[in-house]
Image 1 (spheres, rainbow, N blue to C red):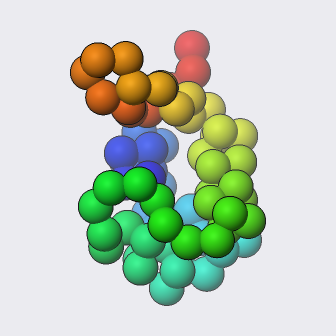
Image 2: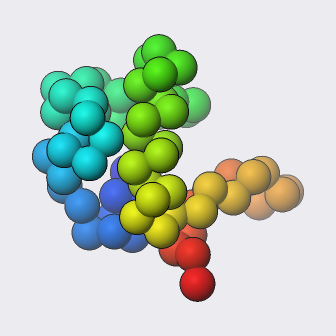
Length: 71
């Protein structure tokens, strides 16, 4: 999530506004490493906002999962 925000030059506040998820929730989710925790609806809203802005989620392909901007 942090890497996706960095690609878009979004703050946690920006992501909160675009996803409809509270900023404290965004902060809490980013404070832990590993897979994104939280409720499925929360994760879906965050992912949808990032994808709508042009982020692509790359599945693990030997080098690990990641993100990039859509061309």
